[in-house]
Length: 268
Image (cartoon, rainbow, N blue to C red):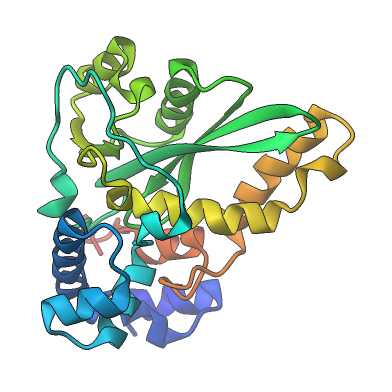
C-alpha cells in the first residue's frame, strides 16, 4: 500500500482525489496563460469569445477560468485604471512558472468590508499550490502596514516562498515592502498594469469568503467582526471543501507533503 493511499485513509478522503491535480495541470496552466494573453487584447471577453478566439471548446475554457478565478472584469461596470508612478515594473512570473509544491508561490491581495459606517480592510496571502491562506491581516487602513503585517504573519509559520505575486498597488510598491521581500530572497512577481484578472486567484477567494462571512452589520463590535473574519479563514483552510482540490486546503497540504522515512532516511 502506497504512502498516498495511507494518507487518504487517515484524512478520510477518496483515493481518487489523490490524482486530481496530476491529470493535466501543465495543460491547464498553459491554457490559463493563453486566456490571460487574450484578455490583454480584449479585456471584456467572456469564456464564449475567448474560446472562439483560441478556436477551442468553450467548456474547457470556462473550466480553466473557473479553476484560476479568471473573469472578464469590465462586464461588472467597474472602471479599472492603470497604476501610476510604478518605479520598477516586475514581470509576471506566473505566466511561465507553474506551482509544483507548497511554498513555491504565494499570491497576495486585499479587500474590504463595510461595518457600521466604517471600512475594515483584509489582506490575505494564498499558497498557490495548496490554496491555503498562509497570511492574514485585518486593519482599518490599507497602507503598507496592512500587507506587510500579512507577510510577517505568513513568515512566522512558513518558510519564505520562491515567488511572491501581487498587483502593482502602492502598498506593494512601498520601499519597506520591497526590502522585506528582497531581504528574504523571494522573487517578486506582479500582474501587468490594468490586468486585474492576472491575480484572479485572490479575487475568486474573496467572492467566496464574503459569502461565508455574511453580513458584517450583524456584529455589534469590531472585535466580534475581526473574530468572525479569522474564524471564516480557519474554516476555509481546515473544513471547507475547495472545488479545485476536492478537499480542504489543509487536507490537501497534508496529503501532498513529503514524509521522511527514518529507516531509509529518504523522503517518501
